[in-house]
Image (cartoon, rainbow, N blue to C red):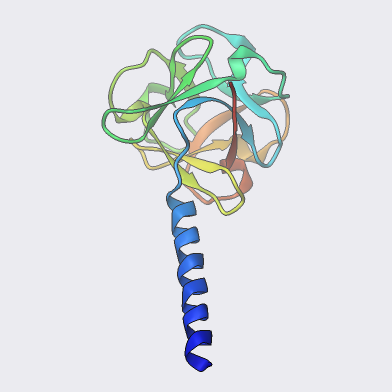
Length: 170
């Protein structure tokens, strides 16, 4: 009787560890998404639907706009590109900076770590996006909840302003 209880406990422990491991390593599927800030429930988008290189990434009310849609594509060196659907431009810290508080902007896609992001699953659900170039996380500036607040790089801390839910689009 004891050995079957012990075996059951061992199986449940193994299943829980496997589930946790799978969750922490889980990566998004390549495809088209809306990115939603966990702390504000607002969608990320390119400010004023600009088509200009260097236009800022901001949070705003979710409005089903093409400028609030992003294609996640596998980068050849590992990680992912996050590409604005309406322009085909990649997100990166302005000028490829490695400094905190650098605004996230769209720019012509090129290969390299400055435009590459790693997705880290959060216990809150969703992901933190980590710049492969700097190791800094994408964050809504100072956890603000106002419309048109820009996104910046900041040391990773895992709070809700650095966690984004991905809504898969057809």
